[in-house]
Image (cartoon, rainbow, N blue to C red; front, side, top):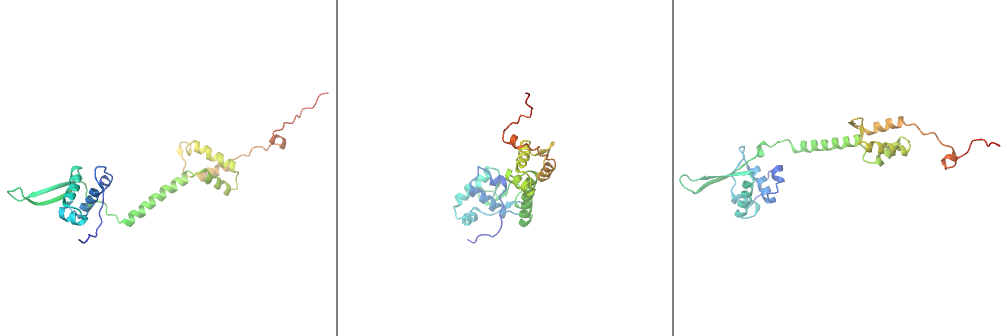
Length: 204
């Protein structure tokens, strides 16, 4: 049997359902692809059986699980005046393939990438990824790495906030930190190495 060449869609509620087998989810996708504007699919169990190379009993089991979990409705039309089945059709319970957003796939991918990049850039701007990134920035500015550590630890402790608001651009805050930096008064060599010098004059 020649395989059809068309797209099928599996909505999230079906895709992540723990009550359906993977094959039942695949069959749902096939039904959506074959549904008309009224979300009705006339394909028979025999058609699906040949398509997926399984028995009609197996197809019936997949359909029953979709019906049981309220993803599709199975409608049966009987020959008038008898209990003999004339036709059977399946109908989607949700919006179906025809009401799904038909935005071109290339635009969707482009928009998704833009969204991801925007989120990523905002995170990078608002907060450095690590202390190493701060160190590198302070080095670019020829600034003392000890202040890079002070800057990072200060804002890391306060949740990268300026006042009550989340920081939008950490590099601007770093520039302000460096401008406001006041170097400590250098100590004499003796003090640096732990020696004390008694400057009082000895009284004889």
